[in-house]
Image (cartoon, one colour):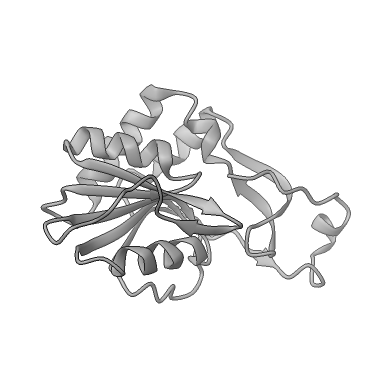
Length: 189
């Protein structure tokens, strides 16, 4: 958890990236809150500040390569790479699975940091880690702007989430009354 929690939260509020309503998460679970990081990414001064905070707070060192999964982590990942003067790669979705394309590759000199926007269950992060581990490189760690996880993610890599937010999630058939009365939407990251 970051010592900059209030500032990070304030940035999400200012940019209207913290939504309230009834949302379908990628996992299929439901929530009354949703972080739409793309709203923050409209403002490069905010992205730059969040990247600066992330770099200061992460417990990982000697990073020379940043990788971000599509779509959520792309903008923040690229800005972290820019500020670290590191190489930047991204993973793309193909038939709802991540893939490394465009002749990108990792080599054994790469000390990789995986940068994501929001982590809830860690599904996309696990996919990305599998791809990175399939190369002869060193995965230094994983970081995200928002950590919504409520259990141990078991990522097979060190993880540091910046803003820890513990908004409850619900199975679609176990919704509280305040959510069941609102139509569910899937806003996307």
